[in-house]
Picture 1 (spheres, one colour):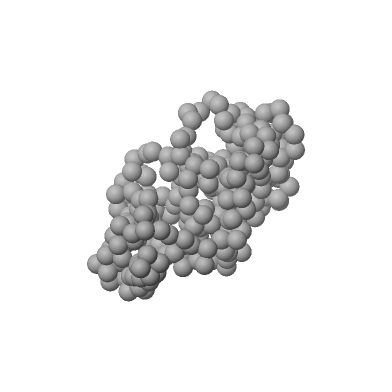
Picture 2 (cartoon, rainbow, N blue to C red; picture 1 turned 120 degrees about the vertical axis):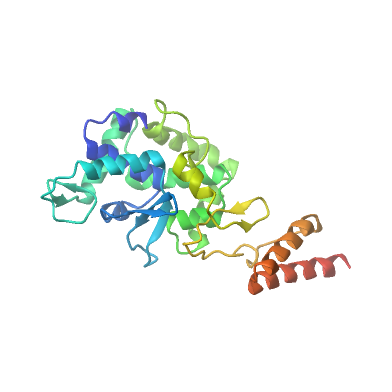
Length: 272
């Protein structure tokens, strides 16, 4: 984050880093508590406050961002009584303070007006164009249903994306250049903590890989695509469906096994 990293104010730099690397809403940022960083196994997650879903959610925490948060807490004056993470002179930060910080970085980068929510949109768009599933993006952003996340899938269409990225490429100037390029999502950047976390997570067999959800966290999206009326499969995918069904049976996941059994039966009827 070249322009943001050069801002003289530590609070400005931290707010922009959190917004850009987690995709959280401005209100969620301001509601973060001093104990927001949660250790699960040997990895770290950022617990966001109650939002539109009326439940806390956990965002994988990039090691570099954790270091920034730890440094901020270490410099926190002992006389501050509030448990909010982000304070200025001991007082809660107003939303306009976040807006001004983002605009400072935008001005330094030589671009026009940028609102904090645009950093959220940019992260989501980058994620879907790099292959992150809609379900994972919905969980990351705290979307109540996939219809909200589908907006980014539509943006993924090249006829729309060509025009969209004329804008988002400028926004990316806020967090490009001087630091090493990140080939995947910031939350998945390589590091000792994340590497150890990946070794401990519960793996769920999927068509193109595994779910890396920690066993301590519940998943609301089990087989969500396979139960969608828009889901379509072919005989080409039969080996994967069989493997998924067998995996579900081995784990005693009756409902999941029934879903894949039903899909296989539909394929048999279609090819009979």
